[in-house]
Image 1 (cartoon, one colour):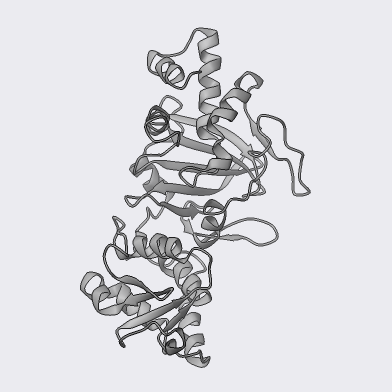
Image 2: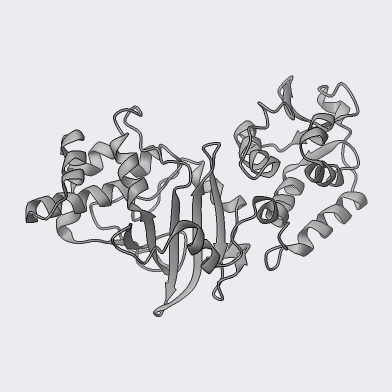
Length: 332
């Protein structure tokens, strides 16, 4: 497996050592375990099944597997349990790591989160550098193949230039009606966000669609190597655990919440989507309601902005036949 990302290798050691030094209540208090082969997840979260599906699905195999369908997690009397015998048949490395988190048969959220932040990158085997990422997904600087725009938002103090492959964006929009008025992206769809500070790229954050329908989150630092966190005030964002808090939630953020109106600046800086005035279309916003619906746990206005650009191209007489059909299909 890959080496730990910068700054994370010590977390796992600290986690294991801390678990040995502090006691915890016995799993019998849950009244759910039926054998010593089971480990209790005591995460104290509102949607534990979704969290376990996301994290353990990604850890179980590189191609992602549903841990419930694989029967490594069972739910009994409201408690989620890890079947270590079943896990051992599927992934011995993960079994060893899971057992190392507990000496009393219980894994808490703090322990699980620290383990995830320390080991997630290694299990997922992400490209180690931005050059390797570009080899995998293509050159996002090519405007003929990628849709790009810039934004100042809550995720980063830096202005971000975000790229998504046109082929995947068009496919999601073409399937909008068929998918129940939802923007759903194909497996392998990749959003690449370059964080720009005074003209220099200082970070790259990435979302990539997994086979199980979830998204992977990972990031690169200024030198182009993998990093476990991205800059944000007052605390840096740890990847991936702090990413899914927003993507799985329902909180609205600026400037997407106010679009197509301009958002008020925040104390930390501007909140703005940098698009041409003619590409801001309230009818498209009402149609997709992209930020509020977040149909595919995607927060950005990718479809909205792309359709606005297509309408502007149609008005200028420069739209392609493929894109004209997309607008007509959506009633635009």
